[in-house]
Amino acid sequence: MKKPFLPPRWFVRGAWRTHRLLLRATGDRVGLRPPVPGRCGMLRLTTTGRRSGEPRAVVLCYIEDGDRLVTLAMNGWDRADPAWWLNLRANGSATVDLAGGGSRPVTAAVATGEERERLWAALHDYEGYGDIDAFAARRGRETAVVVLSPAVADPAPAAARASQRTVPDAPTTTGSR
Image (cartoon, rainbow, N blue to C red):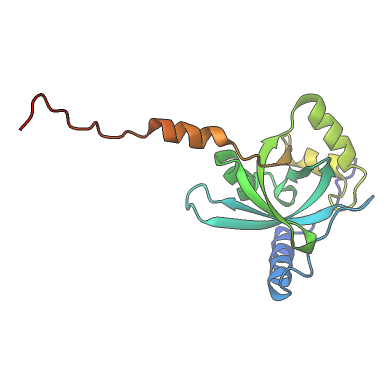
């Protein structure tokens, strides 16, 4: 079987830089798009750097699965995992910017089992990833299918923090002055 064509790494990295520059130069008016049948959308994912703690943004191709967004941790089909995925594995909270100016907090998870198979099959229906089976085979290991779900505000941590607050005991007196 003939290997699918992959552009050289310098070209792929240059295309990523150009895409980010286009977003910056147009104030996000050009470069992000929603998915349509047969064509993946483009979103900007902002993670927190696992070592630096600084915000890190990347533009990714995605499809929708209900209210969830689905992408691949493929790093231009390079063998190494992309930095954004390593960041999400260290801290699963992130922010997604969508076409039209929408921004929302998300929580990342890797799809496994039947869900992974279903989403992998759905990705075949979209242009933008290329021949995903052939490219994934070149990586030499499984490519993570990443699911970005809307973050749910959890009141429990705030309540837990409130219950852990310690208030110094009032001084007690055993007699009067």
